[in-house]
Amino acid sequence: YELWDLSIPNTPEHSTLFHLEPIGIGTPLVESLTSYVKRLANAHSISSRMLILSEIAPLLDVEYVLGPHNRSLEKIYGKRTYALNSVGKMALSLVNALEVKTLGSNLQFLTLLTWRNVINQRNLMRHHQAWCPFCYQEWYENKQILYEPLYWSLKAINICTKHDKILLENCPHCQQYIVHLPGQGKPGYCPKCRGWLGDLPKNLIIDDIFPPTEHLEWQNFAANNILKLITLAPCLKSIPSNNSIKENLLAILEKIPYKSLNEFAYLSNIPHGLLHRCIHNSQSTVIDNLLNISYQLGIPLIDFFTNKPVINLASLAIRDSQKINVYRIKKQREQSFQDLNIVQAEKIIADALKEFPPPSIQQIAARIGCYFTTIKSNFPESYCLLKIRYNDYENKFIKEKLEATLLEKTPRSMLKISKSLGYKS
Image (cartoon, rainbow, N blue to C red):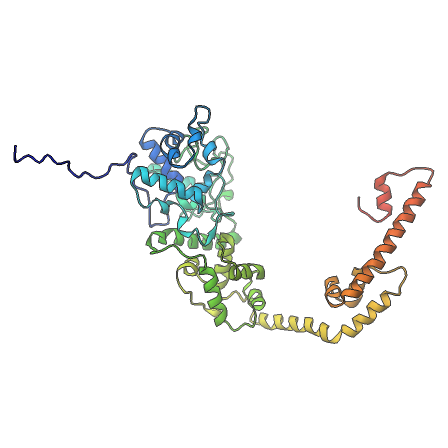
């Protein structure tokens, strides 16, 4: 008996759910988190609904959904299951719960959570599934696992990066949209009619599955940049800071030869308001805006988040070498109005104040050759007098017209009266 070891052996912790390996982590074709949930449910021979309600919901502080009358995924996620692959709290809470149950440690890479500080979730994800039927058919014929790549759920990418075909969004059999995490179903099949999603719609015109040529360049650019973010996410030592864009844009502005943010915005074809927000706000930015900045500056999106990008001035989107001169001439002309036409404008305004009937602000602006806002900013007192004088005249004119209308023997409709006064309706 002395040789017996009666101590309790140290055994590794067991997972509640199967320790299912995610597909494609560290590659452009990594699967989405909702795809993983479907495969995990199928591995346990239960529906996604049952998996979430019985195993995941108790960890989400939503115990009320487990009542006998509330057994629906909509009670937890509403119609926002697309957010489970995104950058917000819904994705984070599901990742944490699944890792507790499966003892996995890398499920965040099935979402865009790595980029949550720099990418805003607005307009980021499709509200319904999209898929490439050619991929599904190839995987089926090659006896590969059917799943849903993460990039299929992104709104900015409309094409399959392998086949250069437009992703489909309606079931080819029942023509219904499919939410990202239905109560039951498995990747590759419609949860509503159980139809195979590797089929093409019967009434499909072949040309409809090819993206327009003018859109293909942008689609390839967007796909390449986003897939690089997805691929490199597991390699990062830390999550990018929400100051990444701001710091790198400021560094670029210090190196370029342009005199102002306005000039830089004009020459790079980036909206001034967008540049201003990125520099002065430390908030995440919508993916389409990030891609636009990346495209116009010729800098890969990943560099904005992880490196100090080196800008190649020749790569800026200055389509015409004379563009900078055109811009400066335009600004000089605007300045010349301030310097040379100010006296002439004052005379036109003074004459207008004596006219009867009084002209409108727009008519006076046309005489000067400027916008009405120029009058407002340069001659605020005269602007107010002109406006009051014109409005008083208009009100008196309308009142007299209406009183005359009341004396007519044959009454007219309100529509005809308003048209006679110069109104459209």
